[in-house]
Image (tube, rainbow, N blue to C red; front, side, top):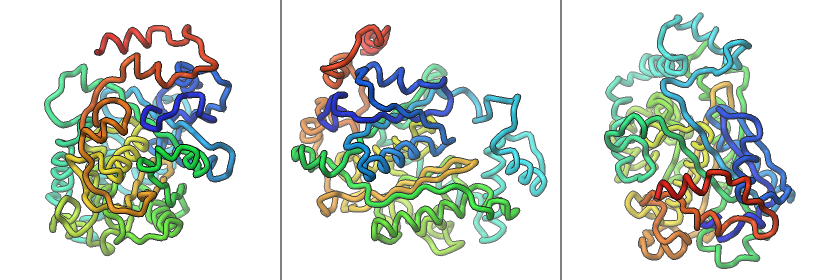
Length: 403
């Protein structure tokens, strides 16, 4: 809200994105900023939860149901691999897991690692990729993360830091809302195309690659690019769902960045990083390095691409970019692909930290420096009309103690 130069009184609807939390957790967060009676939706859609929230917000704005929607994603992650919380009822992934075990064997490894491990093996046997190609993807992601202040895996961390949470937020507005606030035009990024899809019957084709959503990712990307009137060759920077390096390899093909079965050759040539012939993939470090707090991931991807297209990510900027692609996937399944463009049609160039600090409204460049939000920051965006301090409970004290 500070970035958008608004307070909570401008927000007409709220969308909260999370997987592991009690019902109405969204209200608990939004009520801290105001109790204005707006609609609040709580969204859970596996690893695609954050971008599902963006998708809902965009549909509301495009449909004329709201001019300003606040989307927030958050997650308190648990140690170890991702697994089901409710073992006393059927899993949404039950049929897929049964097929995986029947086709590729049952192992003690974490379930999701088996899904993508099998897909990687299938890719290698089909196209001749080597284990070193997947390792190179991970190496590049870790290299990119060194310049992202929000990346979890940049240096050694204590146990307390690893057992942490994550959050991100975005404000989605209409052209009418923007026209009434011309001072925001230089920061506005256009969501030029977007498509959300779920699995088709090919997911049960007995292919490990199809089982992890390859087809729905490919189809969603094609449809999003059609709406935005761009082609894969126009994409200069991309944040994709690299929950495992296998998925990045598959998506280089599925999103149209490489010829079919040639993604590993693209990796070998260095075409997924700065100076290569393809788009820079995951300048944030991706899920591998940045971390993957489920409900926040899609919104964190949105933030990175927004900073890239604004020119704010000046320590890792993909210079000259004017079109970006975001891909966020959840097994079970759902995928959201979004195409972002600079609203002014210009190509991006670096903006100095001093200029960003003025524009961002927080006194520093949030794209290259991570700081805690202060109680004073929170007060600036709280409702001036309807709010109650009781709902803050210990929030202000916790914020103050972090300073």
